[in-house]
Image 1: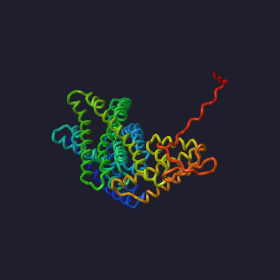
Image 2: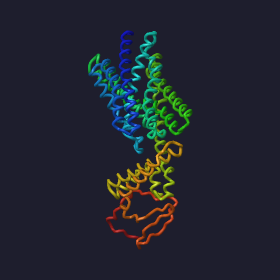
Image 3: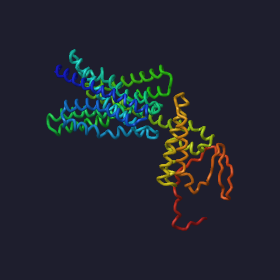
Image 4: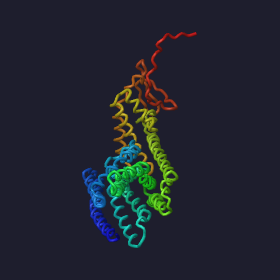
Length: 457
């Protein structure tokens, strides 16, 4: 068995070396694409990078389990994938994030991080076996270390080469979460195909039944385990992004939270081994409600808070534009939370139809882009004055899609201090703004009149 493992490890690591060569080419091309703003080069680099990882994974799965088992494993792993990926896309949907960056992070986790981890973990398992130790120890010794590092490398490349797209913790959570989601999907293919082979040794129905159980446990109950572990590292990466020029503190934050992710990963993997050793198979399941589930909901709460803070930051950053008469107080107030943004879109839909709703979305996105540039300037990071001018222009263009469509609202201008409102007599009069800005809210139609006479005492 040792010789077979050794041969498999050598072959796998050889293929991984070839993939590494492709990865170097891919990173170089991708870097050139980012630097030169050439999408074709970026896509070419990413495709070359992911092709190497897929080469390793495809060889390992098909060679180890066969084509039928690999197909079953792929289908089983893809079933929960839309929920997993959609969660992180939803979390970051109000911020303009290039689809290439989002796809790169997911592809990195699914193709590259999984291939690297597979090769290293297989090699460690061979070394443990040669020394008379349990190969399962690789899940505690090497897997937490190499898998967390491998998943982080993709978002780190974004951080190093496209810093403007990773400016805070919410960005880091989205990118690291997608990398973790990609890793989880590919790892589920490996586990599901192997589980099918074990069950199919009895009959095909037993194999499908075993895979179904695996999908319920890994694909539904614990689908967020990998993104959660990588999410701890994302906190460090996001904090580092908010500390430009402070390389020492940036490194401490990233490494410190990476170690936390590794520790959680080791605890998670070790609980199953410890349960087997102590003849307590339920230990792994007990860990989920006792520790992982509370931590997961804590992270969900933190992510939602960060998402809300992103909207509040927009209101703070754009406050000077109110005094400059670039935006009005109600517009600024409508950006302060995502519920208000939704109300503003409903208002635009009510009075200007679908085009008005789309215009309001464009206004909100442009405002977020401008706020991002001001936020970067506030922390001493590089920002673009041209991007600010372009964003303000986009806001002005978007307004034409819904301004003046509500017949109940008189024409008005904001000069930075007062409203100038057109009265029915045709005169423009200056009005002091109210203490609380008036929000554009969807209004329900008045109730119908009663169908019977009303008398009064």
